[in-house]
Image (cartoon, rainbow, N blue to C red; front, side):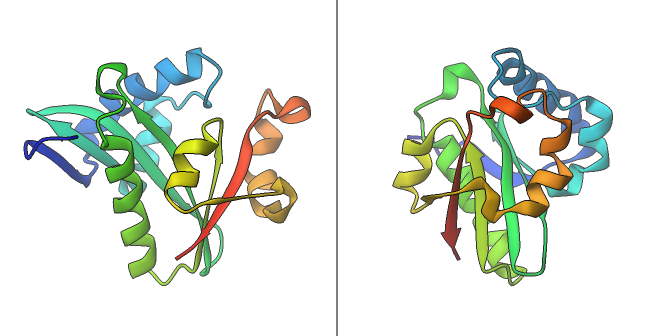
Length: 155
């Protein structure tokens, strides 16, 4: 369980390099798309980070598709902090912000359906989210052989 020293907060520009390094580890394993620092800087207001003892140890981002639909993406936690509850805290923070914005439905594309299932997400066909496919999937190297599972949750 994360300690009281763990802080979930909005990302700052100064966090962009750390976010890129954390997500690059997953991208190298083919688990998520690579997010260059420049791309992260452009979207920094949509990122949240987990900070432990002054160090960024996890991140996630939100992407809006309609006034009612959004995605939680780029969820990543440093290997040494996996299993501590930091991923759950990041998702809860993202869901809280989305709920405040009036979003009614949130989705994820994941290779870890058990994690999101425990958080109340249900599997759904990817075709339910054509906006996602047109915005991101057309540029993905896995487009014709996608192994991610789409999951959705009502907020």
